[in-house]
Length: 296
Ligand code: CP
Ligand code: NVA
Image (cartoon, rainbow, N blue to C red):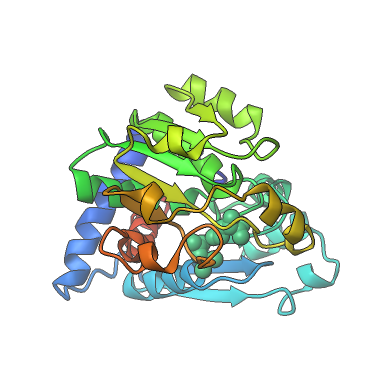
């Protein structure tokens, strides 16, 4: 059976554990400079409708380190950007490559890729979900705390990164409180899924309340890619949600990056030794290599 990862809960708990174990092993081998060409001869097509630093480069270098090859397919590079349907793209790419990664606006475009592809499809971020980020985040939390007993406070927008993290927290039994302004809460379907996976987060509109018992504070940009027209409205709604030195205290800071300093996070906390953000970014590479070796 072909396994797709359109969101983190497409993996079972055992598969998630296996991906994280593979990631730790591959990270160790990468650090020791040991060759690990486990995907020699394999190709990954990477469709990007939105910009990317981490996702693009970690998948591309990850495939190279595994002995394979990745193709960057930007909006102007393939016929998809000029009207060819997603389902046709999925069926054609499947005849050339061994897996497809898609960073798309509409989540339904990634699920359509998965419906028509005959190779594994991986979501590289949609408006609704970012499972690869969650894999790296879980790896980072386990490395820093030894497991998933940490208490995490999400402070900011309840969209893609938050929604996949909610499911990841439920799958690993992590204690999570989510603080968003009214109107920017996670999708109720995500909360239902989390409840079924093991536990929905506590919701609040008060950042201070969210961080009170937390070990880790996680935030993300207020204006996501594709929301540029909502900028003024969002900056106004998120006033009071900035993670600064007072709110962070002696807790660990997580951020998926890119960060908008002076908006969701201050320069001081991002540059401080409380920030786990560079470790998170590095772990994108190792987590995705774990995922790729598991799926292929
Ligand atoms: N965190 C993340 O997905 O970063 P990029 O947009 O740079 O890929
Ligand atoms: N919420 C952000 C995440 C970027 C990795 C966005 O969608 O732009």
